[in-house]
Image 1: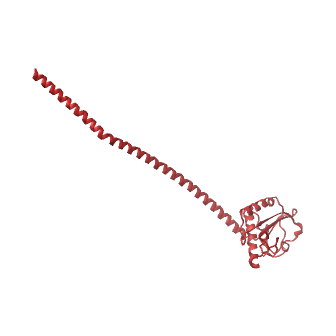
Image 2 (image 1 turned 45 degrees about the vertical axis):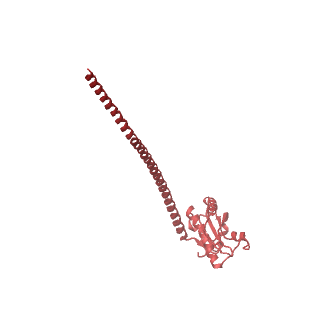
Image 3 (image 1 turned 135 degrees about the horizontal axis):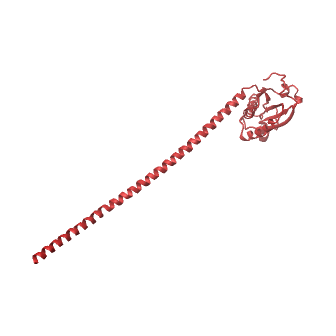
Length: 241
C-alpha cells in the first residue's frame, strides 16, 4: 500500500512539475515575443503613417503641377494675345497713315470739319511707350469716335526742348505712331482716318523752363473732327509724307 501511494504521489508530483514547466515555457515565450509583437505593430503604424505622408505629398505635388500647368497655359495664351496685338500694331504702322506738317496742307474743305472731341496723353522723358493711364485716356476718347460720322483724327506729337531738333522731331513721330497703332488695332479704325503730325519741339504748350512744363510738352494730342454731311474723309490736296 505504501509503495502504491508512493507511486501515485510520484506520478502526481511529476505531472505537477510538467505542468509547472509548461506554464513557465508559455510565460517565457510570451515574455520573449511580446516585445517583438509590439515592435511589429509600431513598424506597421510607422509604415502606414509614411504611406499616408507619401500620398499627401503626392497629392500636393499633383495639385502644384496642375496649378503650374494652368498658369503656364494662361501665360502662353497671354503671350499669344500680346504677339497678336504686336502684329496688329506693326501692320497698322505699315499702313498708309497720312503724314504731314499740318492738317491744312493735306485736307481740302477743312473748314467743313468741326472738332467734336479731343484727348492728350503725356510721355516720360525720351519715351514713346503708352502707360496704362494713357490707354485709359484713349479708351475713354474712343467712345466718342464710335458715334462720329464722316470723321478724321488729327494726331499731333510733341517733345520738350531737350536734345537736338531732328531727334526730337523723330521722337514726336514715334509718340504719335504709338497712339495711332493703339487706336487702330484696338478699335479697328481705318488708317486713312488718321492724319499724323510730328512737330518735335516746334510747338510748345507750356514753358520748357520748368519740369512740369516740359512734361506737358512731351505729349500727343488727338483731335476728333467730323463733317456730318460728308460720306467719307476729305480729298487730299497735297502729297503724303
